[in-house]
Length: 243
Image 1 (cartoon, rainbow, N blue to C red):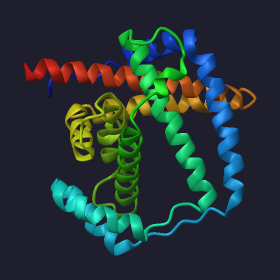
Image 2: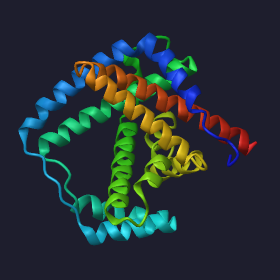
Image 3: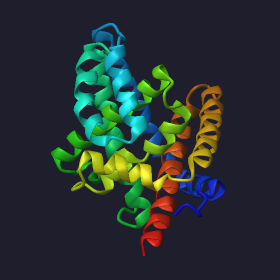
Image 4: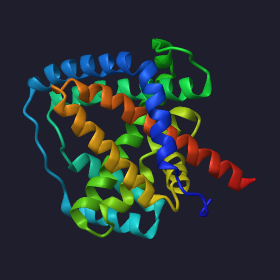
């Protein structure tokens, strides 16, 4: 696996081909989700605070690769850290539910399991949504901790755990820490490549934002397919390496 380099061009080409076929409908889903989430956000004022000592301890556990300690500390950080108001949390949950379905849709379209944009992609076990919620919260905490504590640079950590929610969606039976570990292993040796892909996607999103702001939703579809295309590349490389 350490000898495999993510092919950014291939991932972007794949993303563009799928976006041309399915991107418009996905853009509409993003638009409607954003409008509804924005409405929910008006129920309360966003707020942010965090417990420095807890986040520092979590960062030290991450730097040691001590996943057991991380699992014990993460709930403490989560309970003492406040990222949003109630309305923003409702919007976040809505976006997460939509994200889970769209990730499953993109995985299905690329594997041949789906042949069109369909709400069947949301027919997933309820427990899976809870697992992805937990994975997303933990990855967010890890990224925030790495940003504030500077023990682990955020630009090194974020690419290594970005695939955890996608892995969880594709493997409903997997545990939360298993999904984090799988993403960490899958992205090994490709941190810079994933950073490069992220910067290109950011550029695409900015261009979309400049297109009367509407283009950002279509750019979101490109981002979705690029992430799944990169995930599929690294997944196949890991499978071949294990053989």
